[in-house]
Amino acid sequence: MAGSFDGKVAIVTGASSGIGLATARLLAELGAAVVLAARRGDDIAEHAEAIRAAGGQASHIRTDVSDSADVQAMVDHAVETFGRLDIAVNNAGIEGHISMLTDMPDDNWDRVTGINLRGNFLCLKYEARAMLKAGNGGAIVNVGSVNSFLGSPGATAYAASKHGQLGLTTSASAELAPQGIRVNIVCPGLVKTPMHQRIRDTIGDAAIDQGMITRVHQHRAGEPEEIARAIAFLCSDEASYITGATLTPDGGLMLTT
Image 1 (cartoon, one colour):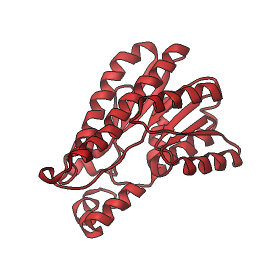
Image 2 (cartoon, rainbow, N blue to C red):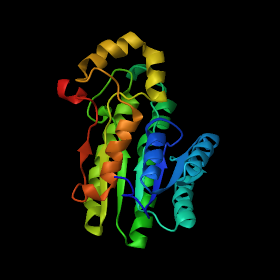
Image 3 (cartoon, one colour):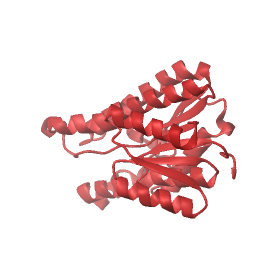
């Protein structure tokens, strides 16, 4: 796929670490100009500089995806900096506080759904506006989770927000595909990210290993770079007839649930 994104401009949210960072790096390696967006501005500034030092094109902007003005500014920054917007990877998300439904603080629900679901909606809204205005089509990939299909004890808000992303994806595809904009969703399983480590620290390594990794056909957690390759495929012209679809890079986890 080397050079397959030459001349393309991409936004990647949640690009300060994990899947988002791996995706931003890969898209830049493949030729895209990439805008890294995240709440941790210092981190994305360093990552953007590293991409440029390696010969790629990158910019960054601090963005809270739950804030409409921030999201619009992010999209405007991409267009003003690189002249267009062709690709968007809506990866920003949080797991929130792990607690049973009856004990969950109201503000935890609001925070998790505000970033994971409202944030995904706002990104779709402003990214699609820019793509429609340019008239060149585009590709948008939302990043969900196996919790887009499965509930988990202690993760009510997270699972609900991830379920909601499926509806956003299919509805956006139905609206935008006739105008040349493809919208798909990638739903990873266990992946070695900072979020994954926080969950291990909270509920215990043994619980993760016994409860989930033993059900993964490959008996391991995935690497962020493996998910990035799946995302890049859906963003590429190789996926030109794929829209409204769900791709589940999970090592076989969903087949055993």
